[in-house]
Length: 391
Ligand code: PLP
Image (tube, rainbow, N blue to C red; front, side, top):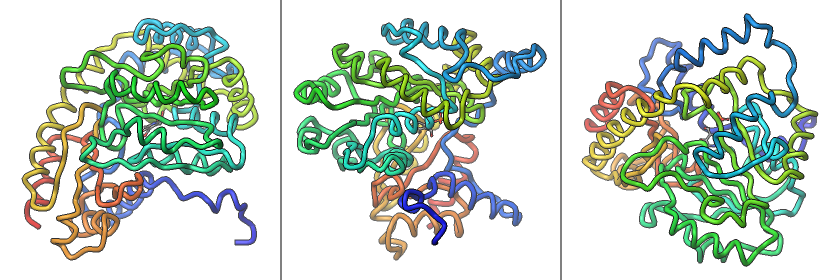
């Protein structure tokens, strides 16, 4: 279209949001959809957090705040990094944004030029490549599959680096696979990155708290090697850990000059994140943490059930994951058994014929797979499995 920029025409709408919209359309026609598409906890925001927000409204915390967040919330974020990650940040090294998504957007706008390459391991969160494209840079995808537990090797990382590599993205626990990198695996990547001092790193820790199994606690790439701290940006937020997706609070931490540039982008686009949501996020980070364990227990139970049940289905192979709330089975056998062409057709079939909303693997850079979100009731999960068992 003559009116649209080249930039906007390079990107596609968020696939996960599209599935939700399609499912809602069917729902409005009176069709009952089993919701396994969307990536948000099915729990309500805890009462203490709701109350903090109501208090903020009544208490006049309804005006603009500093662009990068209220000083008190920034302090709670600094305390969180110290307490949970043993990382020390100053106030100038952290900022609050409207969701973790905006942290990634700000970073890309702040550091990327045309011709810059951004290394993104697949399967990836749907927004990474498009946000990179919106910054006129080029996504470079490293492919992984079920056999390697959806984790890249140091050899793959090394092979994907060129003179144009500007940024490396790592997300663990991962959306859409739930894979979690161990400290040893991270160390192997660190060894490669240490040979390439010019590369910036972003670690997306949004699922930090949503882990199970017997790991030794959360670890990211900066915690693995603190010498990377001066070129790593941490993305985190309250959406997933505290069932607060709608509140839109995320935060970033990194080198002062980069945070300052990200703040400039935010100051000229959305300005401060919602003042009321910031007050709620303060309570989330510094108040009662019991919601986290409640959710983890539910997610782990659902995970164990759905992984076993999916593996029982002819043509479906699903590995166990260690975190997040997604099952990411390979469904090539099922696709051919149903006479379909690919995972995109399968997800359409699931939505329109079986009335199960899920997202095709292609949207995450992994054709032949589909993503089931199990951030939904056990009852819904059982219904989905029953329907799948009949085909
Ligand atoms: N990173 C990953 C891997 C995600 O899955 C999401 C949400 O789906 C986000 C970041 C951003 O979440 P929010 O913008 O709600 O903080």
